[in-house]
Structures are given as C-alpha cells and as structure tokens.
Length: 82
Image (cartoon, rainbow, N blue to C red; front, side):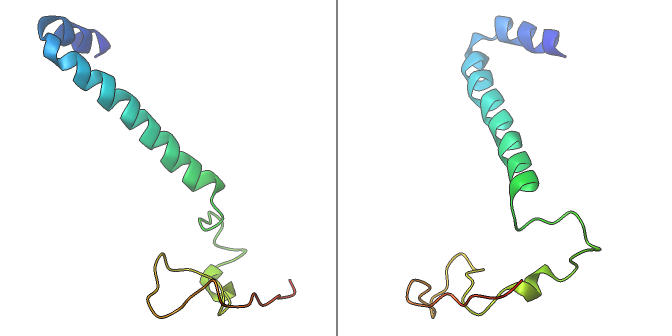
C-alpha cells in the first residue's frame, strides 16, 4: 500500500502537499484521542469498582463546558471526605 501511495505521489506531484498535511494530522489526532482515553480522569474503564461516577460530582464541580446561569469562579469549593 505504501508503494502505491509513493507511486501516485510520483505520478501526480500535486498530491505531495496533501500527504504531508493529512498524514501528520491524522497521526496527531490518533495520539490525542489515545492520550484522552488513557490519561483522562473522566474516562473510566472499570465499571465494577465505580459504576456511578457522575454521582460523586458535588454541586460546585464544573461538569459542563459552558453554563449560562452558574458562575463557577464565585462558588466556594466544598471539601468532601473520601
């Protein structure tokens, strides 16, 4: 398959910039999604130990990207005992 891509790039030289931008962009996207899946605290792979992760969020935790009615910077952080 790689030989076919190189052959097409030699035959049609206008495809070279396409391969130079799409290839690293796709690789970077795959690495980013992998990092999010492995290292994010929101993603859970074990459903037996903590099946209700969303129930542990307190009233002052920001779980939405943008909330119109709540100003999270003015809320006090409630300390919970774990």
